[in-house]
Length: 175
Length: 458
Image 1 (cartoon, rainbow over the protein chains, first blue to last red):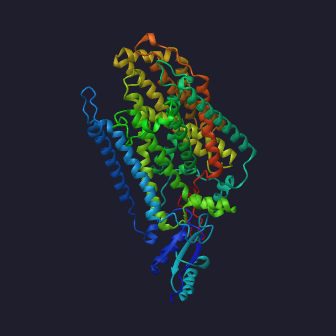
Image 2 (cartoon, one colour):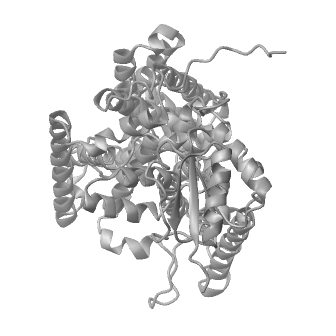
Image 3 (spheres, rainbow over the protein chains, first blue to last red):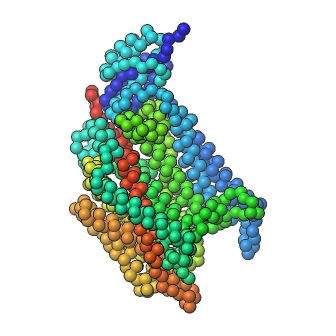
């Protein structure tokens, strides 16, 4: 039977230190690991080797969908569903449609960006994941490495100690 | 080699640790409200409730209770609607436009300014609904939806409908932007909670945020995109509000200067409201080291700049009215300055053009009692600006026999006051329930507190 997964966690107290640590952890080639910080640390993406998010493509598609919806709604309404001849003016009044084209584009893109970011990319809401320390959202910067075998725990702890992490501990469960 | 740079004032004063920020910002959430808070809250709540009672009776008895008449069919409701929408604009400017321009000083004030935006748009939304007289029909008057009344649709060619789309989009996107910014801070509050019920509520609201760097990476891009979308959005909203006037062919309204003029006025009044609120909030909630005098100074500079833009617009309007050679246009503008509503016009000029001039001087920009008084003057002036625009053009229309003098009724005053009660009630609740300062963003601009080799990256 396979051992239960565990997460080894160590702490730092500032962006510079956690970034240094992240570089070293990345160098060791762990499969599942992450850092946790109270605020976004600039340069962390490079230090951890995180790929740039694909979120902008989602936003663009949503904006395009919003624009198409607006075009469809306005043009179809005026040309087909309820054409009203007002003094022989053109039924297709494109300049008058522009404000709603713009608004629906922004509406679709904005709402989708936030929704997609939280649900698709961050897999939230998720209340099951372990919170390693209550001060991670306050003033602590954690590095967490997932291990699958008990005998690895000690070596990872030793490694974290070498890179000057504080209060190192192991938690049962996945990252 | 070191590069000489301008010495900047510290954005956060004192020598604070990250934990100090959390402790001080969360304090109002975690302690029982002070007596001062209760007094102001109960007062606002009473004003709001009486305002809503008056709205209730107005809907029952009819909008005739309002001062609207022939020919002034757009009275207090539309004036106040435009006023509140304008107030909201500063919040989005601070949260989105200053973010795109990397103005780091925005971090201390963006949360409360965004809250103000949302509450102001909510207050604004009440007015067109009452103005319809039968708000329960508003859904099919305002929104296009498939129905069984024949093919029957709203008119997409009408600026009033564009306004429905603009304002509802603005509200939705502002709320989404605000909540997105709040999630990491709600997680901070969650992790500090002792009371299990509070903990449960903040846990749900935090969505289970853990501060993972892989998460922050997506989050930051999302924040950039939302800022990028909000920036043209906020400019579009008051542009479209101005179309309500400019697309019609009423003298005094039918001008191409309206969109930029309205946007400048909106930012002007919005910043004044931010100053009014923050001068109080930093005092009451002890946030003077975060919302520093330097922040207020910067905001006063924006008030001065936008005030000058508004003044320029007033002048340009007059010049164009004369230069156009259109007698109706000329007549309306002479009426504005010298006619029966001259008192309103000069109130507007005094409050909007003259009062910000004090802010040319640094010592006055940093004088708290003065800026508080001036910010209120600006708001009075901006309400009167909309009064002047709406009333002067309508009261003296093309047919002199129908001219009429417009007065606000008692009900108008009550409902107007009620909207301020609603705004302050919501803002006071916000100050007690959510962190008023974006902790994650403020911590990110503070000096690095690493144990080894920390460097300033602010």
